[in-house]
Image (cartoon, rainbow, N blue to C red; front, side):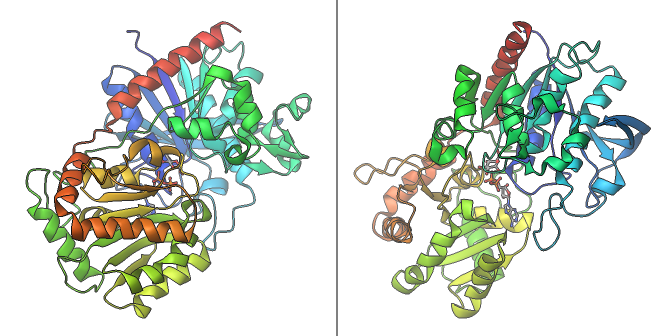
Length: 491
Ligand code: ADP
Ligand code: GLC
């Protein structure tokens, strides 16, 4: 096997900056590729929120010149080591020194986002070029860095360092496309001849993701089912025709998860460790979770956990419409962790006061609590309207916390439906996006808990033995890289 050189550019990377699963993926995948013998470097912004000391960032370059439109702009570059993978940080204080990644405290998107991420993308390519790092593949993620595939073809076609690079664009969420006023177009330097509906132009605005899809040598998303769903008008959010144009060059690869961070045998963030053969620690985690959220201390009442961005995608408005009926009718507790939509924040934030001892919630972002909820709950609910992959339900499986999910995207691919005759399966699935369906499926799970404990035990065992480690997915990424290289070579 040929060892590949891979440049990844991304807007968030664990452990430096994270708002969602994208960061988990770009944190973990490069390490696995590296262990397989490939050489990977990662480029991301130096956000104001990054703890320079804690993560050991060092100055790498004092000045990197980047052409934006027809002006040369300067930035500095830091570097840190992420378990053997060098991660480079673009320091451009006007763009990145603020604490938020994409928006301010009130969830207002920064209005210069197209410039910030256009700059990041060009700087990432320029850095590789100036370092003499000649990638076989440039692998970029979501709209923020999607333009790399276009820059490679528009600007770097004959470049001695970057000219040979093929590109892969990974779509983690097609609803976020990076649509911005054409007033930013000159700055991005993409050439007005390319401002056409088949490339960047979208009803008069710029569409980053669309252009990225058109120019990329390969495109993938993060589960096979979501790859199929995004080829349809309902879930393609206007880009289905462009994905269908890619033909076989658009595929789905399920995300892996990092079991060194997310498994109850080794998790040092949770109150006690446990394994499939000894679940005693899980009972301690449940007891502690009940205590921390001021829930009734009741070892035999099932807890349903939620860890989520509070946005429409996640279907938590549907849960909001069902949850009170659920706690009024069933013997069950809820623990909810999340932040996002202000309306949902105030609804879920107020529930513990209204249902003391039955519902606990924490509005905000807290990684330790996320681990506590995965470990201490009996069930984990994700009623997503769509879900490209979803990581939490995969974590839940490993923690023996059975997922209750809407059968969409990666949720459908990773959770096996409970079979009431045999006790096979790993969770509870429903199809209809409604409070009604949530109510009945939660009822099904709760009745299984009380009435068929032997099935619960069997499912917990099956769930904990599922293997979604990165090795398998990384091997598929390598195949896609090689295909991207063949596609590029054939141009
Ligand atoms: P998405 O990327 O759409 O948000 P994923 O399920 O892929 O969904 O990934 C979500 C990741 O973010 C998980 O690692 C989850 O634990 C984490 N997460 C989401 N919200 C919070 C929160 N409020 N506190 C801590 N972790 C969170
Ligand atoms: C996105 C999706 C989520 C996916 C994650 C990582 O944020 O919403 O489903 O797991 O990206 O690929």
